[in-house]
Image (tube, rainbow over all chains, first blue to last red):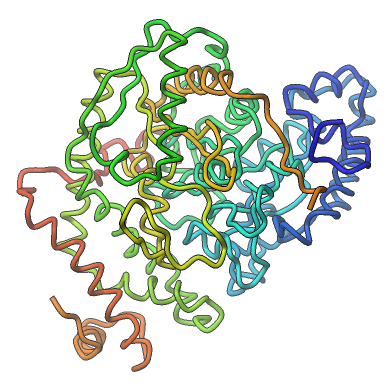
Length: 481
Length: 67
């Protein structure tokens, strides 16, 4: 039995999607059996991890039974048929509350599934729950005051990251095979870094946003959190595609995201920025990320140093999201302000005072930043950076020290934790975080890869090579504490 | 630049917006000041000839037959 699991039989729960799917297809395993292992595991660890806001076990069991019978008749829908998945609680599931982690939205019940949820259901996936998150997806710690503080399965005194912290924790702990999260500044990738799993934000426009509670219409993304790169590619394959009802959705062919997995890296150029990303970084994270880069080079990649202009100004272009947040949540701010956490309310209200002149300048800067990245991507195929400067901080930390500098962990958009991830939202480029080692406190460290728009297969190729150079996935030893 | 609660109150009075009480104005003022200070750095850049990242293309909004 793999370390990290109690005496209960949960051998199925620790498989990847790619490993489990053939067993379901050939009827060696029933979707019902999978749930019979998964649900007790969730019930055992949920009180500690707080990864779910709402469990859907009854409907999940019904769905699993339906799929079991259908598969038995030969009606197998594909890779996701019978696979339990979870979704972040700001993604709509019809008839089920979508709280966005906020008490102010506790009675919000969508009448229609999100576009990605429709795809999951049509593929036979079993929805097991709505996942906990940072309130309104407005932070990186998932210390939700209304639905429970999500903890990191590797060290329950630390954050799982955010805002998709429930997804990161659940996938890492083997409580879900996949989570769909949202990412407006790193909220899929940062939990992946903190929890030692894979988090993917595809190109803006690759996956429909319809049905998620959006904060920023120009940078919000729905993306998968999985235990393996292969699983990530499979989930993205399912979710990607044009949605005529989402203005941001691009009508472009969807490639086979798994096509390049396993190929060596000869001919691949890896760009390592000489500015910004490695300027603020813990020694442990730096060592892990540089080690990952070395391993990519050993597999044939060519390393190219690149410089990206204007990044020291770039935060402005992301912070102006505060204006859009104020507008998006205006009705709540007017009517249910007392139900929103104080620190979030302050940030939201502040957004209404940002001068239009500065907003327009920030949007112009955004174009220049995008052009800077585009120029770099003419020279390289993938840019490699840390996902975050430090490993997951302690839940009660008010600040962290990197080198000789103390960084306050501001409750409104933690400045330092997300400094390496928001640029992919600003530019719309695809970006993925993959585990690359362990840092302080034996906590996971992620390396981030950024690719050219709509060239996710190359990104996955390099991500798979990075994964291959690491030990096989290991579950956190939850039962040993 | 120092942003005062009185400044914010005057803005709300003259231009409208989401109403706030005195306590909220006092607590939001430093946040606004931090934002504005950060954004003021953009004045160091010549952005006059730069197009905005926000563009509504001519074939957007349904002309393509979608949406």
